[in-house]
Image (tube, rainbow, N blue to C red):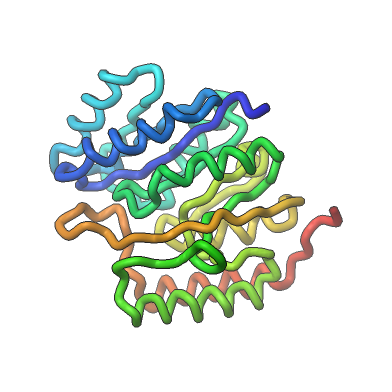
Length: 245
């Protein structure tokens, strides 16, 4: 039985939707039988995001923790802060979500069920049966599908949606690696570093929805630098063997 899990959510300039997002995620968290801590990392927001998150923590101190970066450090740095909290406080799994409900908490129970099975690395997937994308332009879908197909072929990791940030990882594995990327490429860096350690993988089919207009900037723009980093880690991963199960 999984006793303790930690959900890490980076936040940056999300004042228009922070309260709604946290409230929706909290409803999903409260439905889980395990002890779950929601760690909200305010990554140097310049608006009222920090104040709103602290209000949420004050209303639900049994579940919510807020950690503040005085200045914006980037998505990867926010994840490292959340991971350090999970390690220091003895959580068994770290689950990563975006702040904008494109990673909907309705899927948390499916993640929890795979945690109960002891799976090392659990990833939500937009590809496969009962999965998909809604409200995202076709050209972005095409780029994502092609990129993930190439990354899967090169890396040798048994997942169809490598670049998706909606995932859960055993804390014991994260404690053994050192993440350095500050941008969205940290997701591929993590997969590369975990590959020689993870003995089991699982995918959760889910539907990614588009981000509501006017929401903040927790997401990242995909540019050539990001694509190059994805390819670099996929190529590096190709040279690493997975452990024998």
